[in-house]
Length: 464
Image 1 (spheres, rainbow, N blue to C red):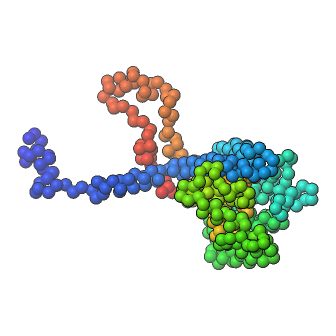
Image 2: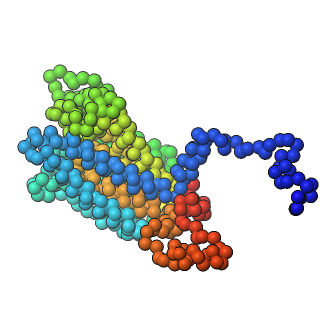
Image 3: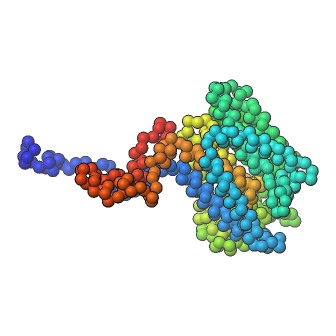
């Protein structure tokens, strides 16, 4: 045969000795192929971006549906239209979507420039809450400001966003100057400013928001590389303060005693909400009783559309619905951690870690209270529960994560090679004349920018 020294065809030379070529291990295993394909898709540069955008959108939309379902009876009992709370939440979601889009398009330097104005505005509003005639008390907590008509504002929700942005900017500037190796620079003025916000919140009696704010502070200190002794010291001081605040309040002691309760106490309303939340989850089964078919929301479960909306979700959508919500929050938390871990910008790392800590800690506190594993803290489920004051800063924070995820070097490279499918210019490889000229010159057709090609783009060392 031409070109063969032995006269045997190439196929016979490949199997000399009668032994077939060894196949790659796992090539014929469909499970392994599926795993490798999923692993490659999971490791793409835009995975965090899609998880944050898609996860937050799904949580918000599902939350709107559940707010409409859980709030109808409450609205009718107040002689209001059945869609009253849903319309207010939809308006807040529309405004929040605008904030999310604006935050996702802002450059990092503008986010840092907004840190001090947001902190000053939050402190000013939280001081106004304590002014008689301006602050409004609801359920014994004076944390609200009336904006006229049915609209109320809770400034402490904006204090979370203020602490994240200001704390991230402060720590980033100190890291650039290599000052975080000293304890005083790591603690001052971050911890005193956080304690000031905590004091203003506790003046109104909002223990749940104070716990979330403390979690954000610990998250920032941990990201800044606080040593174990320093971290443990701050944690011990915070634990002592929490114990004192709980011991000096009969209401908080009663909430603590409701952990694991299975039936309300006779002759009192203690543990009523916690127990009926468990009843709602238990009666949902695997797939629930159906959307809108909850029984507990008919006056048995207080705050069904706010703090205990997860219980109504479990009753109407069952275990499948609650696990879906948990999976969405887990994906959102993973994406936030990935953004914080893949960046080289210290401000992005601190801000992304702070936002992730905020949303994750608040979700754990809310869901843990509904499940009877934690005391009822009165915090809403992020992006899900009714409340515009909580929804607006949270959606702005999600916009921050989206902006940071888009700003990763590998993500920028992946977005840069993307071209719209429609509206391409003629002559750019898509016209008949272009194809004819390619054939005439012997060149192959131009490759399209598909995901397969984008996966071959070189990634920086910081991208996993």
